[in-house]
Length: 420
Image 1 (tube, helix red, strand yellow):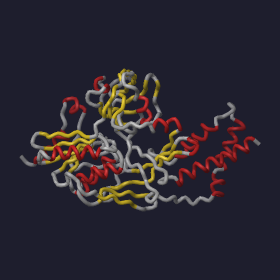
Image 2 (tube, helix red, strand yellow):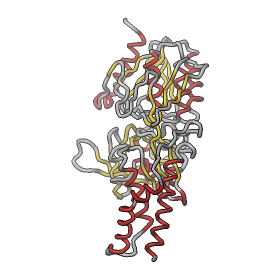
Image 3 (cartoon, one colour):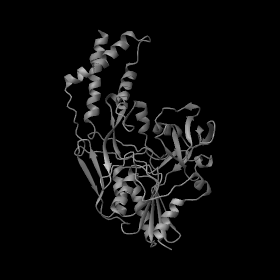
Image 4 (cartoon, one colour):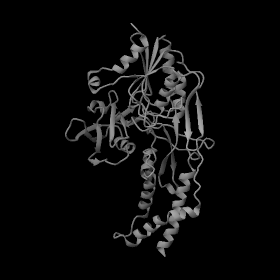
């Protein structure tokens, strides 16, 4: 009898979860995360967050309740077998339910559609904007292990000798294998003045080694600008945060007042940000026309046009990209390339062209992240898992970095100066 009651309760609960997953996309405000090169500094990297009810994709699931009940008979048969026959009783019903959700999403084969249990979802919602306390490094959370992309200048990570490509395999002696990189970031963070020991796997080293760092208060820049030799303006955008375009406009006004002959926009290792910011940033350089399209599973498209009033729509332009340029960075770079507004220099970008919503589940049982759309460049190119190919390919090697050379920047300067 108890098993039968659990069966009916379980059916109702699982169907409720399915309805939430199926129909909440676009009507519950979600948060999207970009795949790479987040700093241990800002919000968890994001790409394209909010979908409004009017623009949300419609569900095309026509499975009738009776069909669903038939479909799930083997599932509930397994549920009862475990309760009746598994050797270690009582089993953890909640853990099995969460495992079922995880398995359901894993079966889609989409690395960006996933489940966070309540503890993970709570950690992922800790706000980290502009300033934080941690080690000061840009990281890539998408690989097997959290990977250092670049230490920030004068940060604990830089002073400790962490290098691009270093992989964090354990924190304070605790193995982090199999843990989502965005959550590993949270374990690295902590109050300024406290210590954290990272076990580092480095190419060329036979075994992981430990590095102990003292966390500090880190201020994350959105924009850095300067005038290079030859009157070339250089603007580096680190992230697409809430205030990034405001800071970008301020920097552009200051540097354009110096009458540069050309402008370099550096989007290397910029892992992305909010869609609205991406459109605003692209509009500072592309004065008119389409910035991007967003396409849903039923074939519908949303069109995002340039916003009038851009500050740098006429000056000769080169955009630097690399494998760490993702999502919002690719939106900007793709718009520049397709419009013919400027040239891309560097290496092929990351290739994050999908859109996710985070949808909280009922009863505070965590959340699911669901891919709801893909975006395309103005010419209709899909860059997901492909990336943007630069107009001029220039590699940046470890030897270049060690020697303080930047051939990608040198090429951008050369293109803007023209034939000597």
